[in-house]
Image 1 (cartoon, one colour):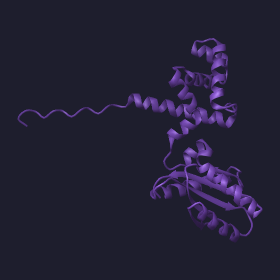
Image 2 (cartoon, one colour):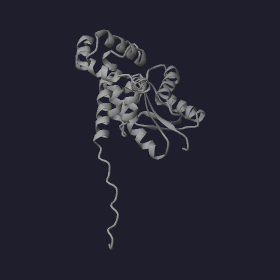
Image 3 (spheres, helix red, strand yellow):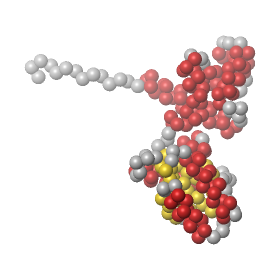
Image 4 (tube, one colour):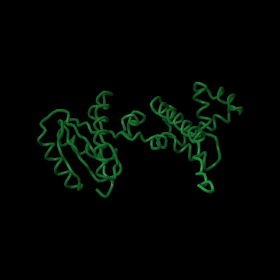
Length: 230
């Protein structure tokens, strides 16, 4: 437990469980991890930092072996024995959320669920969520002193109208269009699709709230020197 681990839950969707249990024992041994069975699910504690990759790897190997779908949820990484309980809770929540969303037979980590994963996580990793959603835009602005973040906010506030966003920003519509093209290069071609748009908007709100709190934070007063004679 001196190195990072992830926790993976694998639930075979049908079939006899014995073969899956035997496989899990072998898989955990090969990867120098641990395995148990709980509530009809295989529970694997595996070395690694990428929970998403671990979930996909388990699904890719176990599902063909069993010949039917396997739902796989994961959480982590954690760097201590104390983190195992947290990862276990988060992975179960992730599995329940996948089932509720019709994702039976798929593989995902808490982080793969985007803003929903943020709500499911015990530690509510706001920094990680903001970084995954708009990190490239924030980094671009910081490195080049541009204002893509503000442009994004104006674009969403105007209902997705570059013209109205340009009026709010007091720039030419072509300027907004060029900035949106750059944002697309940074966030990927699907950044305006409903799922990702929602995450980008939430990340923008979280980022602005953090900045406002940082500005309003009152610095503690230095201790007063003791009065003479005290």
